[in-house]
Length: 231
Ligand code: 5RP
Image 1: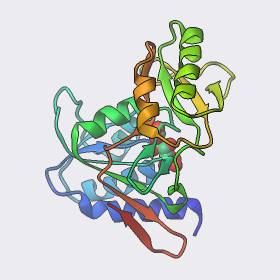
Image 2: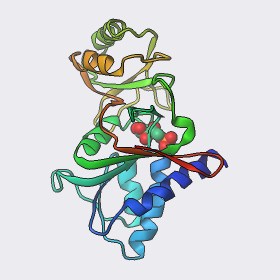
Image 3: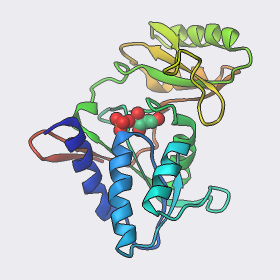
Image 4: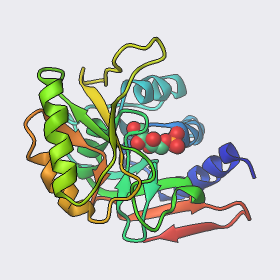
């Protein structure tokens, strides 16, 4: 099975979790896009849900599918969030933010009673960190913030390069919230909780892509057609 097939397989397995009347957090990325397409089919067939999108891209995709939307101001508590991930470890700790939507994704996931990750099984890792950890930072003072993030990384037992993310035109990539992303190429994150605490202590860090104690289950689609559930 190709990667898009695996993503679709994971998305298909999440659809039965969606019940009529649910308030639904809707993730960002290509796996979430597969889920949105399937959810749109169900909505057009009569399923009633209200979605809260985790990015402008997801908002547009949901609108195209005719999925009714609300904001977290209107619906501050959600029943279920379905979202992708860049890495998932055996304790359901995640790296997210490859699509630069980590801030809204984390706000929406934490506002949900349940978060279920959908991904291809290649995202399952023993130790987080091979995927560069995205850290969303305020543009003001970004040079100083980068140095403080370097120190936080070293203090938490990690090492590696920190790179500012750029868009296709070479300009600093801006998130939906107007912030920049620093990608931390660490290779391994032996103590994600320690790194999380250190990063949060840096003024200028808006949020980071470590999702710790947030996901409740993961549906990981494998090439043999089996979907392993981590929960
Ligand atoms: C976006 C994300 C995505 O969920 C993550 O990057 C996975 O994307 P994909 O489903 O395309 O592999 O965190 O910020």
